[in-house]
Amino acid sequence: MLSQMTRRAHLAAVLQESPDAEVQALANILEPSGVSDLESITTMPLKHTEAAEILQKASNLQDPEYVALLYYLHRTGRPYRSCHNIPFPPNAIIVPPKALHTPQFRCGQYTFSTHQSHPGNSSVQFYNPLTHSSNTGTIEAIWRLPLNARLHTFLVIRPHTPLSPEDQGKAPFIQFPGLLTQIVDAQQSEQVIIIEPIHIITHLTTFPRPAGTYGIERKTLIICTALNRGRR
Image 1: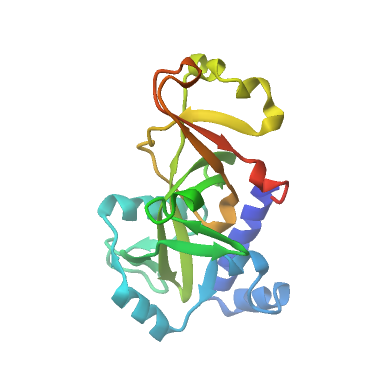
Image 2: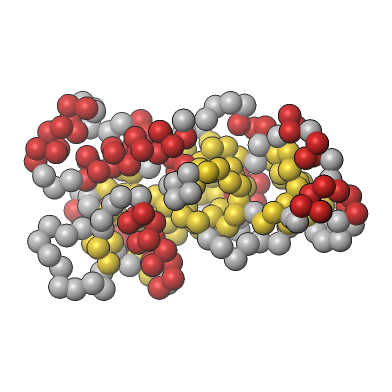
């Protein structure tokens, strides 16, 4: 179901962002209101003057961040072009090297925040469109930037680091899958994953545990996905 939702979101973005008049006409037939429910939580339409104002206020992305964003866009089927890859062909869609860094955003009735802004709202279960699997992690950054006359939101996630099978076996949760609870390393991963709001499944309940808990000689984090309640 999550994979299907992601494909629908990407199709909506491609239809709405295409410069081809015939494709735009098709988008209006498929979505008469002009914006689908899936698209509305991922992108917002912009006038050219609004896009320019956003970029004026935005701050530069670091080179590794910009490369990671381009990689994500290309892997999800959107052939945007790097601002460094010149000369530009006609009708090229350029990814700006700047973004607004916002501490939080709302998705439906829920608020999601960066870890620095609100640790409780930053822990999430999410669908990774590059691996077609679900994972858990912490929102490190939230970027908003204009792409082809739409304001897009991207989330930078640091996934939780699993414990070794030996340490996982010391905790009781693996024996009770119905609890929807697992234990992970409290140390943040060095890996980063970029997703969009449509890929968020649910907030997590988290419970930090000191070293020595369950005989595990390192700090750990107990995470629970029961807040989902079957919504996604």
